[in-house]
Image (tube, rainbow, N blue to C red; front, side):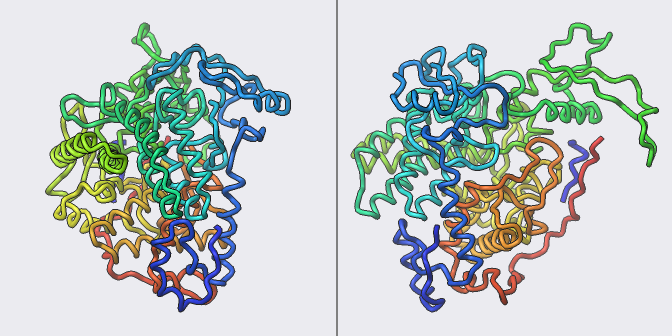
Length: 592
């Protein structure tokens, strides 16, 4: 491992384990995938009940005042409607019961980033027509990429109407808010999230088809909006003309309002003590830089020569007055569009995110193009299908050229500014397998490198212990799903089952301890214990996407591993097929 100092359901009842041989029904019957998978052992009953009832606890609608709550910002609750929408009658009752203000947005929005956020005086919730499931905790709105994994869980718990309504909400966002948003709050109008809309559309369509309710008219309508949303990823500023690949980019400026100022103070302090990494992100406001351009707020940071066991700041120099630059905030905002907030993958605290063509984004866009090709054929648009097929082939060619490292046997992000590939090993190297764009040779090389990432609780995000939540030693449910499904797609079934078992069994063990499901896990200690240095330090309970991924991975777990899940009397099996990594353990960088 590498030190970063240098850079700084309800699951229905299983009659008996003998019925596990009938698991084929789990694959075919999407609406009831666990008809023969849920043993009568109490731990699985408890966790399945927690997930099944959790969908209702996490569902928000305009009949509930809880929907308006936002602990990330202050001020009176406000609900914003698109300027072209007449307030529906139910809002009058909501306004009286919940003591909220209802306003229209200042202008019509037809493209991402089109609205001037300075014209919106108070942060508020953006109106959506249908109920939706939120992740949990402070994340009390409908998020972009979270919703894909939530929908996987809803469909496995036979909640098709709720899942379809969430997709319809995204179509509403595209029509009235300019695109699929990070989430439905006014301060998210400037950015999106990883594009998984077509994956959601097809999951819902196939679930309804399996139930004998295939809706081609709905599919055609969804296709039109999905194609429209795709285009903003395929044009500037998201598109790099030189490479033909896409990048994350937030249209907004300055610090994001949903983060506490202490986060940015921590970032400024880091750059102050890591001066080689601070350019062009930190400005010193002193006599030598009287007119240096900066962005509020300004931070006073003490620089102290503090001896061990010394409790006072007697040896401190006068405080440095520093500020972060507009360039830093652009990278910070773009990192949040990536969904990987916070990691050191794109420089310290993601400061360089907007200068990278990422493996994850371009793999998801390839998947989107292939999905749109498939949907085009389903709705009889053959010419469109040919166009999407061509675009997908072109993107795959560019991914192979810019993002594949033959020597290392991994996919890496590409720095558009330096015209070079990153060397930061990251679990998104498995995305091309999930999307189906890797060659057999590339897939074989990536799987050979699986031990770099695989740990006792599943796959770790990176090899770098930066102290941030999207780096080592943490593992996240969505990435486990991408890894497992990518491995299975290329025939590496044993490896896929091993990773799936490690993650599912860890979640069950941790649930037995505190009876909750969490946002993220420490895949080294196989627990939900986390120690985040900056940013989202809480390990949120809920948790939408972990619930969904747990059900999806459990569904396809083979009978012999399913029977070994941590129950009374069961031991966690060892997996000698995963060879040890020959690198030394990562070390946490110093935090001054």
